[in-house]
Length: 385
Length: 135
Image 1 (tube, rainbow over the protein chains, first blue to last red):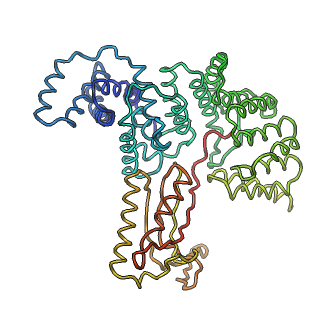
Image 2: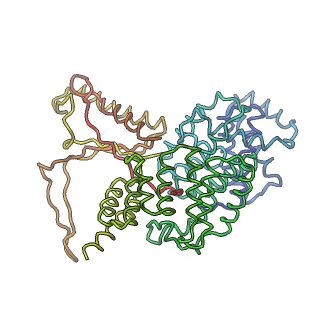
């Protein structure tokens, strides 16, 4: 989905408007509903009657909605009178509000799926229907997920400091889930991470933004017209988005210069090395292995070790890759796929074909399964010819 | 953020602990069972994890293409097919552990004597969209 200019503006104003309504004393759940109502109203009214001060307009409408929803009739009258006397919102501490909203929506008491849904609605300004479509669940289910999430965080004080790492995990999830519905979740994740980077000066926020930009840059080349996956080595690099790559690299370099390395910066560094290679053959695998070593040190993740084995296979040859692989648990996701690739490079197509077929059976998604099945079929056909 | 199919079999799964066919239950026991299933679905809607639930008629027909310009060939229903699917529920949950937990609850639906059937349900993950970040 492409958003109109108005909708893009509306959605960029969402977090600061919500912050102001909460600051005026509304509880978070009610404020969030009121802001959603105001957004819907704006989409209806603005095209014919654009406001001079879009944010002030949203604040006024959202505050009225909040009063409508929470006050008994008589009390409401009184308070609306009060509202009219209230001074217009001055230069609010917007950056802090935005940041706190991110923290609240990614609060550790929320499950990942609840945090994702709440972030997309309260920070991203997406409607429940858009989020439901993006995640292919009924709208009623998504509405429940969001309202439960709001209840869960209702006791959390809005001005409490949060952990930026939890926010980054949520944004990473939004980005990595891909794009299944009519909302482009990858683009939305980039927008939200950009907005976060403007609100907080943190090298890992920059690292995540760089990582997203560098991967997003390859998007057009990743999927063939028939929907099949194109592996990195076979991608048409002319179709990579050079603008996104240079922005990603620039952001990454500034972050790395601060010497506070974290996992997102290290992942982005690997993506940048791929982006930097004019052809797959010119990839600097030795440096990539070094970054995987850093990443292993930072995360101690078995998935990282598995990816490292691929890089070792490229840098030092398939035998070295297989040796690195031998130290890992064979039940890891994508282990068989990595083993298949390394065995093929080692000149053993029979083992590789068997492992590709095994990897296809275990593939977590259709595109990968089809890709792995084709690899097995390619090797089997060559052998039977 | 992962979808699972909870598959209920008439046949093809191992025998449940409380293995009395439904037509030998009392009407109250049947009502209690149906109510349990409804409540379970309602609870999942409440938690924001429900996607879909459907029951299937036991008898189906096999169909296949029979060449250009010819009507499809039909066969069956077969009395002796190995597997028979009674219905399903699709859930959208945070992970495998939660899917297993919910399937366990669903399997506790009451049967004869008001006791849980301990029915075997099959949990199958959906093949999702590929992740954006791969290396």
